[in-house]
Image 1 (cartoon, rainbow, N blue to C red):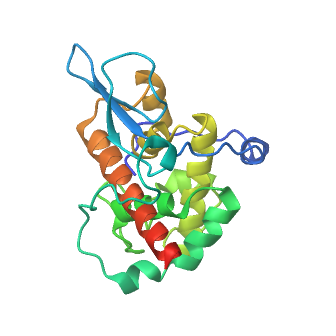
Image 2 (image 1 turned 135 degrees about the horizontal axis):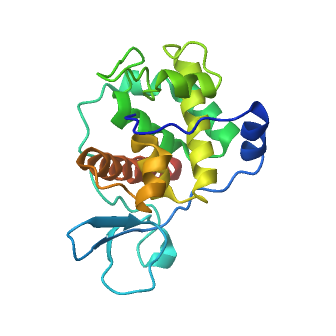
Length: 219
């Protein structure tokens, strides 16, 4: 989780007020648009003007695709299924507590740490969801190397971001990587190569995990 700016919570009251009124992550198609300067913009809110192209489909029947249709194969690092499933209970708990899809949390964990709880980045981000120390502290995480605390703290921060960006999936993901101030500054995904790769990777894996979950549920 790279940080260009932190969203510092002024008080515990602000956190409680924000989390008590959760907005749903918008589960929709992902669109892209290249402007005159060659900058690529992303949104999951269906655009009304021309020039946007649909990148990913959420698999909903109203969009013209069969429900649960796999949209892509994740281009992820080699995964150890046992290591991935080891944290299911924490992800399920966090998803229920903060009302976010499990597939979304898994996608973040996969891209951030490849499900290694002791991962530390070159900039000091820690654990499964790669929490920066200040973010971990703001989210009530005492030990970011503890998998449960890390997942709950990271998901809590995702919930704060989702509320701030009115459930906009793309901006929430971008802000998790680059910071919400950067997303505010550019009115969407910042023009940072790392953040744009990050957003694409999280979205790809999110839709893949959703498709896998749907396939398992149908069995």
